[in-house]
Length: 164
Image (cartoon, rainbow, N blue to C red; front, side):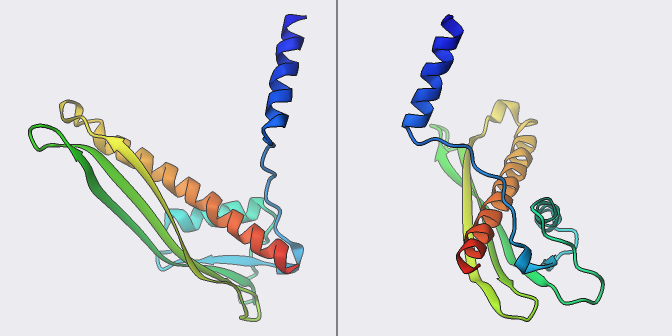
């Protein structure tokens, strides 16, 4: 009985605050086949975006056929010191990830004008455990890349819903 009551209270609290799970993105079928274009064919973001687009319902274009394209114009990573300790050693860093992108339809009309999304993460650097710091930075970059992919897909979804 107590579990049921707790479950009911949690459900009521979540519904009262406006929480609802985010729906999976389903791209409009009107867009047709879509490809991801990057300056680096081995770009982790490009590969992950192509995979996510496929999971969202976008077809991969046949060779030589016209298709909509998501162009990754640029990716920029910057890491800057955020705070120093009493010995002037860096204790915290801020990593920023900025992606510039645009999208056009198969006939070349712009669907999304060039725009940027920037994400950032702060992390603590421990000089005594420096062996873990590069691994931590790599993990942060993977997480930022995953979050960027989701942000770009949400932006595409919003634009396509409003146009169709």
